Image (cartoon, rainbow, N blue to C red; front, top):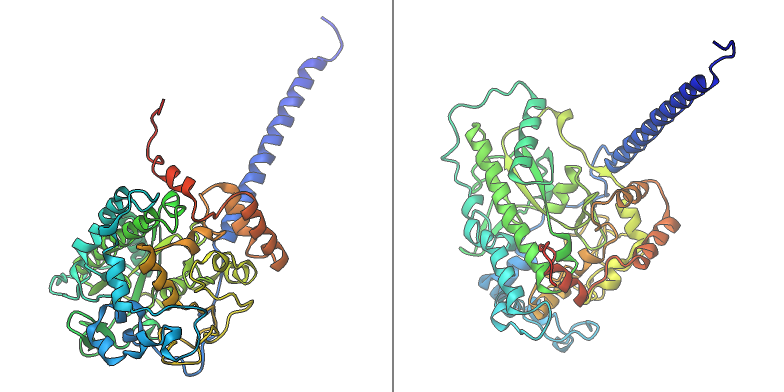
Length: 472
């Protein structure tokens, strides 16, 4: 036997140890990066609502919500100037070439667009409208017209006769939160937050266009809410990429149908636990403000909620309940770096076909668009919040012309991406990077082909996105 040391054996062992140490270090680095990414994606918790409010800020009258007005005969008779003033021919301020537009006729034209399907136009054929009608069917059955703000309808009704006499003995707020968020996931919500009921965000009065009656929280609503459970419903990426074509309207319709199911199920769940609860979609209150309050995202330039990982490609539903939590247990608003990104991006505004989206560099406390100083023209904005104000009348006019919900501002948004890790890494970096970097990211988004709109290839891609077979 040789007296020389077994160099090969020691060297091999050393290499194994090195590889092992390297692997451990690599796993540690990946785990560290994952923890950093998760932390950044969760945002920075804030003590109060993230945007300043005016000293005289007050709840919004639902009679001034555009879709409520567009559905109401009584409101038209009370405010004919709202139709007359959306026109340069009315003698009012010039509207950048806008032609006369009647909101009620526009609502009818929007709702009956499927009857005028043109099979020669990609994205607007009988096939496209058939899908859209099917996607809206769930809402039509479960809670008709909740997307237009109709309260007390179907599964979102106010009847509390089914509240169980025995209240489930939760051990505390943690158990309540766990049960609610687990239930929300089971029902199909992609995100859920729980905040205190905030009267500032509730419509007051509520308005029911079916009875043409203004309703109060004190005399008509069945109980005094203590908490609001806010849930997000994801819309399909490939369908939204077809915007403004009808498949984008289809995923919006499916979002509303799923919202009815989820909010209705959550309200039913709570009632069976002995708590009063009412599900809500676009009725009762400002869903975006409640979602911000519940820490689910931030208000964006286009007026929608932008949620990390999902962007503005979500629908919001909520449940008002008398279940309450310990003060410290409620979810809080969070800073995800979204509003600062919006200040430098403007891509949704550039893409908007109606010119409805504000292109100012900074948010303001009131609308600043043409005619916003005329209360007979600017009547549908909830003023007194520091944000970007859109002219939703122009947006709705395009809806009526288009025959679908548009969605261009959602599809164009750089936060609207498939769920790939590198997109999540960029989202996380937006929480601490500045304006120049944000502008560069917007340009990179365009360079890599994201956010295209009016794209017939996106329509072709959508209609094969569910097929895994061979076309040959």
